View 1 (spheres, rainbow, N blue to C red):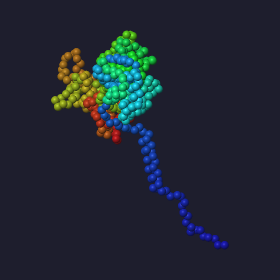
View 2: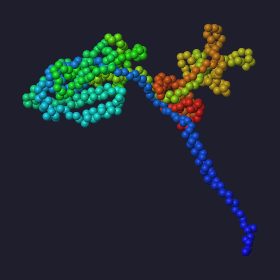
View 3: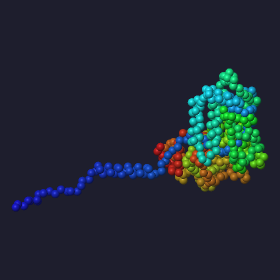
View 4: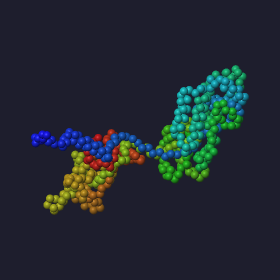
Length: 478
């Protein structure tokens, strides 16, 4: 058997070949993943655009409404129907309601429902809105709101179902031989069908337990109800001036001690008005607040207990987040050491030793006055390498005091005291620049600052939302 000659066989290297393109792709992928991860994990620097705004501070209260009102009794028993809608004004001698003693009118109206005012689509929509609004705002802790909502709906239904627009009712009933009594108003005023027995309440008669509403009940007489003679069927409010009395504590008394005129916000109806505020002592020895008003009486004529807010502060200015506010130290120098030259430049006269060391000379140092109040100037603390600026331990001389011999007044000032001013980092130019602010009001999230301050901010400026993440001079990519 012949043997094969393998001396000329070339052996190939079996090591895998390196794909350079794949290596580059893997490196780039890892870099992208690392960059994305680093970007996600690091604190994001966001900016806020400065806008005008306000912060309103309001104290919530609940009070009892006191009006010039009187309950009017039914002249006789029978079925009642109204001519005047709830909350509308009536003149002396105008018909307010009718009383049908026999029930003939009631039977006729039931047989002819077209004589009563049918609910329009708008009125039905209004009632549905009241129900929807109540269901969304109702809370179990305020269970009394359920009763108030029922009263409100009854009043609305009463207003919409009035027969006051029926002009030919008298002639029709006369032809049919149906007799009824028409009752007119003896006084002019606003008619309301919500009666609770407190129509004669006065501020002095208010008691502390009144606000607990124990056993409180409001009655509304509806069209078609059978009433008894001598029972109140409506009340007449004879003046547009009314008041709201509410209990006050020591804190409230101190807060309102110097306040006479206040702005009142009725939260349930989102209405604002002005009122005169008085703190007085009632017959029970307790102190109460009394808001005297001359408008919106008709809006609340069917309510006895009213929720409201007293606006204690309404400050307007530039609105910024509290997280944007930071601080910066400045040299504090008495204002009378400031020098203003004829060309408008400002600075200070620094006292320095002469070149030969035998005396001193005065050197004017131009400085930017960052803030100026009635007593002090505030200037930036310079970098250590800045030899031209006013720096720590320099001595400055009061203008015009060179050679003065008045020992009672110090004519030199040692630069050193500092004060921290509040401000924000403005990034309009792409890097952080400290701009001072003067806060005038704040809440838990925002502050209102003065407008048009020197070295301050303006509307539409971009500022860093979280000042703790940056430093002055840092580049910011918006």
